[in-house]
Image 1: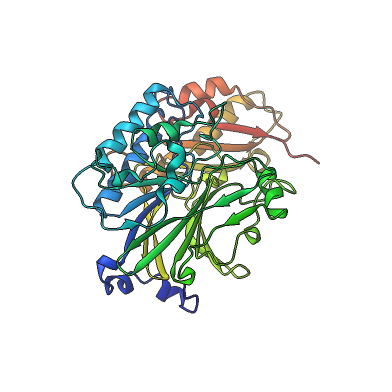
Image 2 (image 1 turned 90 degrees about the vertical axis):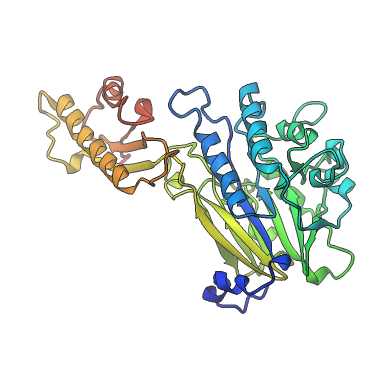
Length: 414
């Protein structure tokens, strides 16, 4: 894309309003939906489905051309029948209908989707009435396994609900050839490269040995807007337990990075590789960590020729989450007090109530947003003894969604 544009120009939606809509791709982007997360929990069991349905509803409202998923649609490698059925119902309800498909696929569909047993995109299947196609890769939670190398995404693809691409059946020694899905709408042409999750160290070694090849379009290769959908560690968790952005080819325009749950959806420019990276983050909170504190968003991606605009769209149905650090030595509490455990409990209760008040003030006026928030107190109890967490949890059952793990005690190491 034209990187000479200023940030204001790049993020100017009105610029795209000037273009003929017949030439502009409109795409909903979301990753790490983790359907089925804590599905047996009576309080949080529906969270993943509620937020995913909101993403689908937004896609319908925005009349997007298609939905692009960045992996980990499911939380479990073998989702329960209930989880799989709920997912199928949502996709059938929101992605099928009479809305016409306003773009065409130019790549060899058998190359892109032949592994599913149906060598065509679902919207080109005469037996299906698809209104919003879904393109997805697999993540590390729902990756293919077993002798047949199948996963839950294969089941959805066989039912005609999604277009599953980026699946590699090759071994580490053979390498990976990444063939793009080529789409055209009017005068805009996009090439979507996808690579389903591979163990980071293995993929790192493959990149080092030059065993990962991106196959560019044979004709007019510079006219395509190039997207790469990846589901790997972006942050280093060891010497080779991640994929450096410098490993990716510099002809790319935009990288959609799945797996990392922190929402950094606004495109970040890589000066060395000359492409942008968007990290949408998860659509449901799966851990009580700092990376989950950022508000959850999906993306509305607009593409015209080599220009793009990615707008964050807040997910209003996501359960609220607040966390704070508490250092008991900074309080007026006395470790030698004979009633110290009771007083610590009262002190921490006040902290929780304060966070609950903040939650009430910042709630969306959205009926599907769960009432009870997630609260985490990280409590440094150096010089003190921890309180009875079970008793504290019982007091919070009617107030928070996670009473059993609301407290996290730790001591500083000197």
